[in-house]
Amino acid sequence: MIVSRGFATCGALWLDGEASGADNALMNEPDGHEPRLRLPHPLILMSGCVFIAAAATWLLPAGLYDRVADAASGRDVVIAGSYHRTDGSPTTVLEALTAIPRGIVGVADILAMIFLIGGALTVIDRTGALGRAVGAFVARAGARGGLLLPVIAVLFAAGGMLFNMAEECVALVPVLMLFTRRLGYTREVVVMISIGSAALGGAFSHMNPFQVIIAQGVLELPSGSAAGFRLFFLALAIIIWCVFVMRYANRHRVAIAAAEDHPEPLRSSDVVVLLLMLATFAYLGWGIQFEGWDFVEMGAPFFGLAIVAGFVGGLGPAATADAFVAGARDMTFAGVLIGMARAIVLVLQDAQVVDTIVYGLFLPLEHLPVVASAVGMVIAHAVLHVPVSSVSGQAVLTMPILGPLADLLGMSRQVVVLTFQYGAGLIDMINPTNGALMAVLTAAGVRFESWIAAAFRIWLLLLALGIAAVVLAVLTDLS
View 1 (cartoon, rainbow, N blue to C red):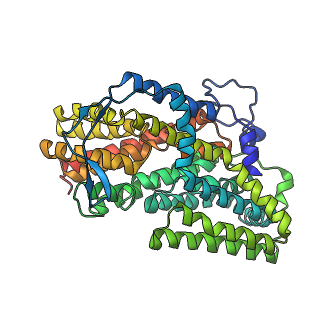
View 2: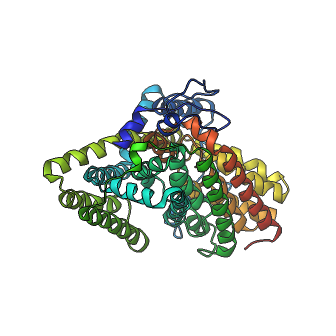
View 3: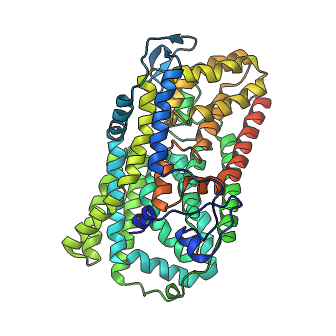
């Protein structure tokens, strides 16, 4: 229900970031001010990115690095110095259009997960358990309820740190919106405490298996090495982020409707439903951490949760089925956006220009002083991550090239990994080709430009923190 309202409403943008009126802040409805910048609908924006990628294939020469199987990462990695021109063909309009369904098919396992989680959480929402629980919490906590925001942010940051949490955030948006709306917080806060926090945790992680662990393996560094250095900057980044989130949330807080000051009492069946939900999430965390679950396994327990929660909550078979279908349906557009982000990569890969982009970005760095080269690597990784949205794919593509370059410059290979983490990881907070980000924004009813206005300054601060960490690592020869 909440997601469908999010799809139906869009808000205006004020670049000074100030809210104006309760209805506008909670529902993101314009109050008469004209935004200084307004981007197209997310579907148009993502479609434009696909066709911009296709146009780039006509401008960039095709080229490839030779590749070899790497036992450490279990993937094919490039051979440094092997770049050569090829006869790749530019992308036609039909091929660009075809890339979109191919991209959706390519992320089918992710779509299955968010459909199942979205359906299950909508069933729980229809039982009334979530609404009554949030109402009871807000009534008891009062103004102190906002103290839960940094707790939620840290939990999502932990998800990013442990397993590069991203698409999983999409299905959790309705629950977070229910909570933040009752406290009078705007929709941007939902994005901050969910995928914003997860991206931060992934970028500064010491053990992200899809990012730092793969990169260290390719560069023949011990897995999890320099963890103390990374944990220090992770803690510093989380503190900065939580302070910003609390400050932003309280500056933009508005009065809640009077009717919501008198919530319904919590029922015994609500307690059982909520305990089932918490147990499912705990089981999910166990499966990811200890059993190596992928998206297919991650979605499966939620179908069982939907059935049991519907029965315990008194919905009955028909109402449970209707709620599940509604929840899955509300996730459809978010899933399409994730698939379209994958289509951008397919367009560039098919035309064999991805390696050309890598070659052009990193070749000039070998002529710079070591500190300048390290900072340049951060920026180059951020730029490269716009067309190459997979962190694991970017790791196996760039690490074999940058490792020998670091040796040539007298730079520690650990620094190379840091430049990759902070550059590629942090750009995910504002990257328009990040399908998970665009899906969360859509589910929360937040326009992309509104999110940029809210988060760009703190993103710059976090990027500066990452660059400072890289410079320190260079000066101390971190190994």
